[in-house]
Image (cartoon, rainbow, N blue to C red; front, side, top):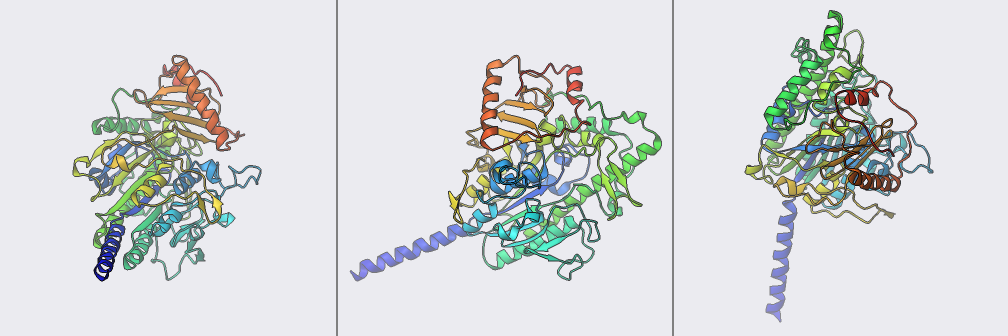
Length: 545
């Protein structure tokens, strides 16, 4: 009996040691979200802007060619954090609370959803967040009460410097002065988020826990601001104009193998003035606007380099999964003129918006921009790095399976051996909508069983395999084979009536299920686009919702 008892104790001890060792093997995870970064704004996605650090992550990892967001900042953040569609999480649009009779539009994360922090914390992770929150701060929803052990957050971005007009910071849920001795002196927000992210990682390492960091940049969102020495690197390089820049990016995308040469570059939006029609003063102003934008992206990439260097210094880089994506396509707000305000554009008190002409280049090779559900509005760079988990044979490869921001929760659950709950804190939790992308890390098929859906401001879409159903608020439904025609020039709606009918029915069912509602505004500066497509030979629209 004594020997049998000893054997059982030894077995139990071995099992506990093995379990502890397995727990330590859980990878660390960093989810990095850029803000208003277009599909073509990184060097490894076709840009001329030097982004060597992100390019290196892509070179030694996997690039997603079909990664999608929700077309807008708040909804994308809600979907990323919860793994359900933004309407289901309570943020079907922006931050206005429409009241209890409109549950999809409360402007804050609801309690029928859980966050990646809540789920990963229960799986033994140290959870941290830095950057732009924008999912209900004004309604009392903070990172600190939605599962994050540590956080340094801005309620909604809108600044880069401590003396910026909208600069407010909250450390672990408590507002702190912008000149607090807890912060680096003369901070720039892009660097600040990384600095504090590494501080939080130090706590995780000290506590011998795997960490999950959500690093939510406000770059390159307006008001575009960057150090003068960085802007000077780019000033004068954009006097070539947006048409030529767009063509150069498209040509580079083809050389990279990112874009199929059969996907023709769509005609430029007719609302955008021809570069050659502008005065020298206008060209100089637009060149400066794009130079500031390039500098903001350059600094974003530098911060990624600082993050990677910090991870390597701490000995945790190789077993850290880094997922980098953007919250929507390039930003054309508020139209062709953009904004160029302040005594010294690019400084803390200035207001610079990229504008519609340069947004055409940011979204190359696609139609449309932020807000819209054509490919330009919903397509994002997607980079995955994990030295210990991605085979060397996959390094630098393109992954062409469709992926969506709702997939991040499912992927983290898979990576962390976590459990997505049916109930949490006494609330029933909606089932996951996303699919784990982990199989794609090693070149395996993703087990996606449902189409991907979009609705934002009445702009709507569905992707099911190679077929994409799409319509702007003012358009009738269109149908595209996005494997052959991702630039959406050849409408198949009338040519494939059975497929179109089936997909429209699927969309209608989803639209009702998530509680989406009609949107009562349109963006007049955008809606000559469809006419331009037809004039370019794209074919007529069909159907209608």
